[in-house]
Length: 334
Image 1 (cartoon, one colour):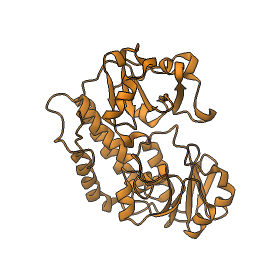
Image 2: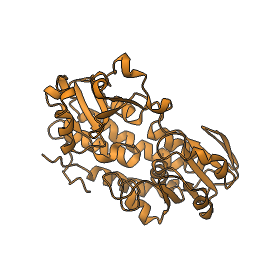
Image 3: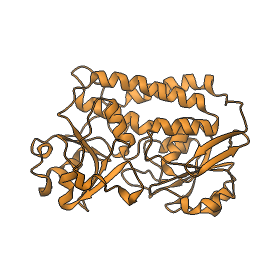
């Protein structure tokens, strides 16, 4: 059965923000300013006008606060999470409308970054879109801020970027609008059996990346009243690459030890993808599988930003909302 999603609430929220943001558009006049990043502090002499994001994850956060991002790295295009430019689908159309130039696909290229003439460069500290290997080269081009998003909520990332760009007002308005929506959704939910295991499943490898309480996904679920299940001690310390704090990786016979929840919430997944978990014989004895309590929360939820987090609220309300609380349905393509 195809889940139909109540995305008009996101559109309404964006319209409200569009009406409010002109009142908040003036950047804070306190320049120069010092912004603390994961690789030390960065001194900015003026509000940036040409931002280059080497992290496709951070690009969406810049767009959400109307920061002047002129170019971005991209991921592999034309798949379930990325559009034809290699931008994430939840904000790809916005990037096109604002003429954000694609610099490269995959591995960062310092020459391409320099050609964009940036006055601020953003790097993610961890993850597949990190360009930390090029930090010395990039920091010679323009002030370079390193942002760690794996231990922060998307709201924390927006606050930091608001400070770095002078768009604090936009960040605050965005966060408040989302908080109001989140509070209403929490009231509207009837939670499934707790605790829950929230994860991304790789069917080819039969591997799960389980979201921790430090992840944006885990934080949002707990704010909505969900309880995150704790993996067994045997796998609890198996954090990816020894650096990331937001996921625990488990595969094979260890996967069942990681998925201890009474309900499974699958991120980066659509409803049809639940069959791969339900059909995995290594998981058949788990209560969530035996009771068919396995739910997909959308392909765009692998990385949470304002856009995908808003979609996630809609999906959770569509799946677990009390009768009469769901917004009018719309297709997933909206």
